[in-house]
Amino acid sequence: MEVQNFINNQQAVIDSLDDQFSDFRNWAEVFDTASIEERKMIICHLIKEIKVYKEYEIDITFNMDYEQFLSAA
Image (tube, rainbow, N blue to C red):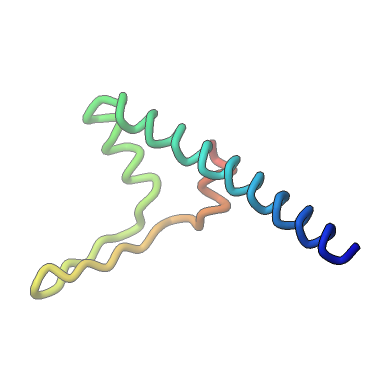
């Protein structure tokens, strides 16, 4: 019985990941088909700041976390 519960829980996790991947892929398609101006607006909405350091080290601060990103879809 424990093994069956474990398998069922794993399947639920896999199904959830499939849904999240699908949502993310849809956002990527929207971005790919957007005009330059629309892309700029999307990026400005998602990213708070970008810091560039020596030797091309980059630090990006987002306006939202992944769950907020998916719920904005």
